[in-house]
Image 1 (cartoon, rainbow, N blue to C red):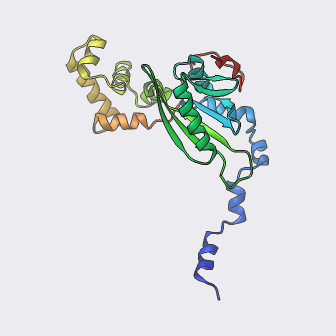
Image 2 (spheres, helix red, strand yellow; image 1 turned 60 degrees about the vertical axis):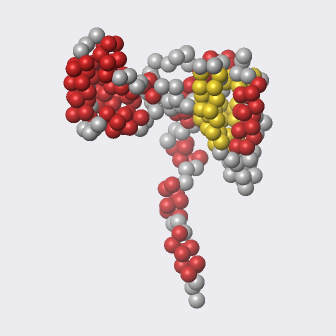
Image 3 (cartoon, rainbow, N blue to C red; image 1 turned 180 degrees about the horizontal axis):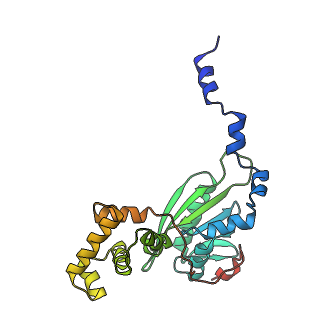
Length: 240
């Protein structure tokens, strides 16, 4: 006689056809040209710094924004392919979070060096019960959501005028109406009219709703990057 558990299991069994559709394999990658170089370039187009660190603590890959952050040396840097903090205390926090992530635990750090702050999320890329060498994905916080290219794209899609787009960017940065008026050399009533136009064109009932929409936009890297393009995994430039 079929038990309740067996009936439930039979409902949860995925069909071979579903596995063929949803399980990516090497033939799928070859067919659509998803080679390693292309996948690494995909990471460069994400508006967050991303690093992959292996079980030895070595940085295996860093995307464009992560390389820029390490090159600046404001909070983090690399030495001998290891991820370090700007001082010994920050380095100790990074090493502790990395060790825990290699054991399968997710960790979030909020680092501060002087006036500079950086949040780092350590995410295990391997399951604790798997036999492959563990690795960790490190995600860096975005410096300024207003620099997201998607914000400019959104302004174009909503047919915002240049002045309305400038007001939207200022609101995103937390500026008040008097501050925006002073920066743009216009009357406060003009700024209020532009904000009203923003709400009407975007269909948002309030500025709060508009800001929530802006911050939910896809993280697209600006076309003009802060440093020149480099070969992938070229970590030597980030030495202190």
